Image (cartoon, rainbow over all chains, first blue to last red; front, side, top):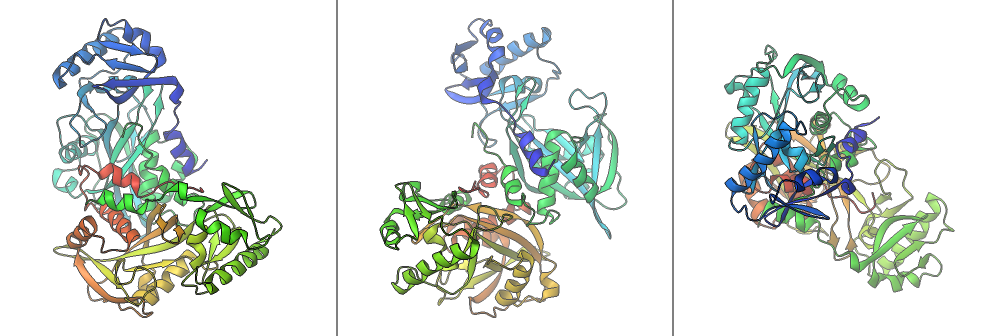
Length: 286
Length: 286
């Protein structure tokens, strides 16, 4: 077990299990072959080819494409195929800076394998005995990854809200960090990975932030997504990342990146260069 | 002109112009096709194939391989083909952590296209009006990249000295940073790139360090490699990186990485993700 194992696990996927999801002639996702017969049964919403599923090009606008896909996803939710629907919409795009082709409800993202975006924040405290990091434990009732360890704050990036506003909102909801304190968070880069999940494929960009917290601040979850916070020495956090699967998969990469940037992983570590390279895998649609 | 252009320029090379350099059955470098006839004339030192030049496997030890290659490089220096020889040796390896196959004199590195290692340090000052960075100008008499802008401290990583000791040594020589101050430098990651130069091919790993300097400290070059230091607001440095070729090629990447880590490049910059991915290109021999 090693840091490099965590990177490999985040990037485990089998391209042979999927075909392209194409919108307006652009590859914007991947659909598991097993889902294709069900999609083909949706009349002319999709055009199915051996290596691709096209959203019918007769849907030419953002609104029409979004409505067509949402009708499909609602039906799949009614049939119990898509679980966890909650009316939170994500952009379908090949790059965060480009206008999206359409929007897709969050629970449907892995079924269509579109690129998703999110943010993760490392809340840390500098003590005389070194850096300590605030770690959350996800609620046992949470739909995804219940009970697993998590970063101080993390959330998806829905359509229609800026990264900065979403960061402030997530800081408030997940850790009760007031706006004035959250505004001191520093953008420090991103991680990217291509990850297969039972539902399908989930390539993602996670935007990263560091926030040095005052010694007397204690995060408190306000939205029921986390059940507890721990302030642990970074060496303890590192050991959990290196040797266990206690963290939700992508949180491991966030912490490894933090360790590299703060001189907590030595440059002569045998995997130093490979780890640095592996934290930002090429995304299949970029 | 953009940050992404700087990354592309660092990774410009034409694989078709080279064949493998192989030692002990392992691809450890690339030789320009044009140099091959001259190498073939060195008796049985090399075994030439259409897609590779092998160091003769009868050289089975580090010492024997190193001596064989050094004899070749001395002759090529005498003939004026290899320029700038100075008896500083680099490891020939596919990974910093692995024992090297042999050592090669620095000036010979690009002719054999072996992976080289180095370190770059960002010396910066936090002022009320923002981060300022110490930038060096390379001596006009320097063999390579004379007169170009450079990071505060930068140097190759020769064989036989630890990264940490080399960092302290380079800090002393290049900027007169005393050991006690240099020891506060924080390892913050690495950049990797595949770069073609007139002499051949130069894939490299540069280990990066940040050092926050006191406001009253002024770097002074002691080894003649730099002729001047400037303390510039980071916005001025960024503009030079983005819009000009005034910096030595790889120093641009060091500064772009610094900007990302310190929140000086916004996450919604159109190239943010591509830049983050591009700073650590896969190395051809890893």
